Image 1 (cartoon, rainbow, N blue to C red):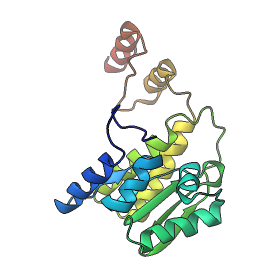
Image 2 (cartoon, rainbow, N blue to C red):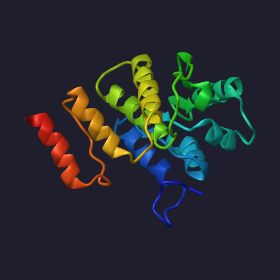
Image 3 (cartoon, one colour):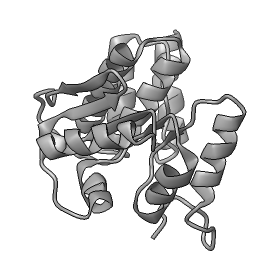
Image 4 (tube, one colour):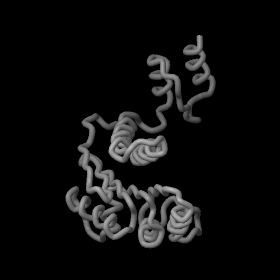
Length: 193
């Protein structure tokens, strides 16, 4: 019941790591759910947690809509469980609660191909933007854009990503191991020529 933890690890593992990080002056960002999230909020006091709406509802013990999620996130911040709570809510967009209040952004209107990885992209972009020195509002914008961009592609369709790369002239590319290496070399080689 503690996702993303090694088999047999206690649910309090993330709480202990978050508390250690906080004590060392680090900003710990945590994306987990269930007992691991509950323990982290009760004992770890992370800088930021990123549950989705279902995970926050499970934590609250009741189904939450967008407004109730904002209240729950605000309560967690006010109680000192985390400094910030970001909640991804699918078609309802996302919200970010902190001491300064709650920011809410609508979903970016796109035709989603798949939701796989969108939450991970959201929290990854948010974390990157904060580490790069951006403020919370700007980081939230990056998170929304990254989550929406992930929705545009079916996870694992790296051949399409490589084809798009060949057309756009981008300087950075991430290659999925599912793509035949010869094909990746061919596309990257065409761009280098």
